[in-house]
Length: 228
Image (cartoon, rainbow, N blue to C red; front, side):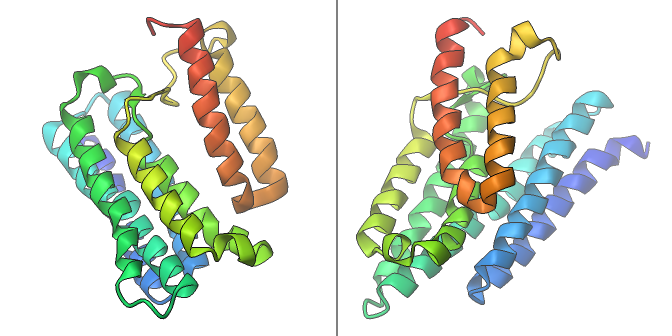
């Protein structure tokens, strides 16, 4: 009886972490919000992993997962982009709200995922956790390149680009492993190894490179495995 509730408890922890991240993001403490995203991502990974491992997947778990993701990987990155736009163009009272386009399209992406039978194993469109990691990495990059990330034009363009990627028809591989055989997961393993090296050296600043690598690796993966 207890094991049925373990995945949902982790999903609730994901939601709680996301709520905490939102509070810090509204306070302008975007670095703390970024770490809240990381914690949410860990809970998000293990709730599904344990649900499959314990064979306790349920309809309420699926719905709860989407609701938690909407906060942690939908509302939170929208708040971060709102803050970045406000900092870049403080004279315009309305422009920062454009950042919540990320939240709107994250909601569309999550709703699409729930009903799209093509996404049982992999993704069609960029998944919300990866999109959120990219958004929350921007304040860290801004510290070293303020003239770049401080550009209102760039932030608006990134908002539009990421919103499009969320609902695009680009096929993206999932990091779920049916087996751990190298031959079956070569592209995924290479992606994870290179990503780990980049993050070890660059930390959050590595995320944009990881995102580009993720998309390019997916093209390679599905070109070599068109029916997987």
